[in-house]
Length: 64
Image (tube, rainbow, N blue to C red; front, top):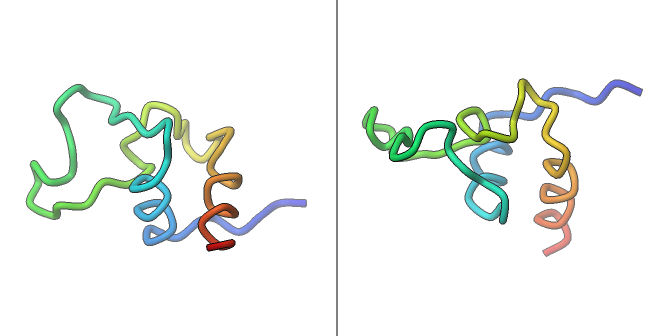
């Protein structure tokens, strides 16, 4: 079953709490572009949505 693509808000929230979050380029964050928001889109592990723990982290957030 194909899941719906996560929203930017979901990716931003997961990045804020994910223990494996790591920006693809050392020192690079969206804050350098003036938005101040990191998201899964710039994480080394994201791989166009193929992150292995995104759903687990998102589910953990939903339980709190």
